[in-house]
View 1 (cartoon, protein in one colour):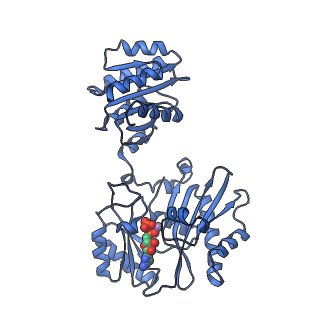
View 2: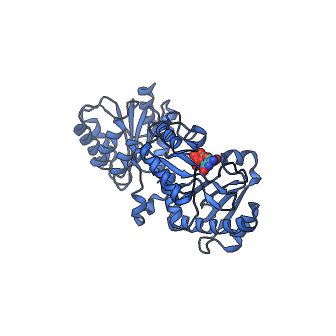
View 3: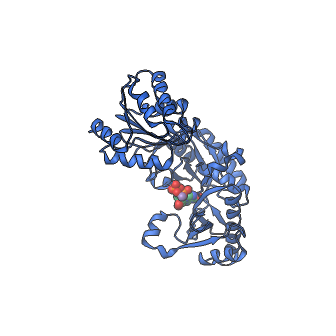
Length: 396
Ligand code: GDP
Ligand code: MN
């Protein structure tokens, strides 16, 4: 689960990671109040107004602006709240900004003596260890750094059993070219950051930039925090940070029915049991000349309720020209799935999109018979070849 920068920073702060302080606001009036409060708390006279959306690249897209007076805070908040922000991570449609983070200016008026670093913590699945990636080249797209100057990206593997050891924290501070006070601050920063990553059950932290201020503080200026969905039950406070307005409505609907659904842009909807089979089915759709409209894994217990929920979600997509249901009957029997499809079809009522049902496995023949005799606009297939031929006829 992704969360906003302001929420990520709250979590980091609770673990003792030093952050650029800020207060979130959803109206220009509240933005000014937030700025005043920050002035009292931190002494800052300048502020940054930062669009809160689940995507990076906000600075380049015009979603991060410096305000040098309360009037400017108000004006910028007014411009940014409600804007449709397009960045290289939002896709061409952009994302609507509902909130801004009013943050203290930590680059300080007129000062240039700062350093921007990159730092992330994530899991290396190959080695089964956590990894801290960091670079002197912060503040810019790390993908560019990785491509043009890969030797400037350092990696520190951390054994989860041992945790981040003192010498590792010092090595990181050293490789970032720090000394004196800043060196000490960096070892504290990375130690707290690693602890936060582990204890929040996160799957990724990305802090870009980590700033060395002109007075040698080390601060998280940005925070991209990705929490592991499977561990959210252990963290109700984090689970409550979910922002449904950032998610695709079809995906939200699907998660209510425990369906694994990812919306795509194609014209052939698909419903499959098992993620591997779902991906193979998407390949078949492409080979038949179609484009998958979604990924949908209904899981092990395909029944009338899940089939109906899945069909409804797919049918809501106006791009869908055909639906391919591809179920392998292992534990679930094909005749039950077939009955489920027929029942769901009748419950939904008018469906003008052709549905191809390919059932294979336990009681496949019985399932095909049920589909064929239902009198509905449903085509049955047993082999993948038959199913793909049907897709081809319909979409081409
Ligand atoms: P992103 O573009 O979505 O990654 O958003 P960031 O939070 O990383 O902010 C983008 C850029 O805004 C940073 O790289 C900084 O250069 C700049 N920025 C952020 N905070 C401040 C600040 O307090 N003062 C100034 N002058 N610039 C800031
Ligand atoms: Mn950033």
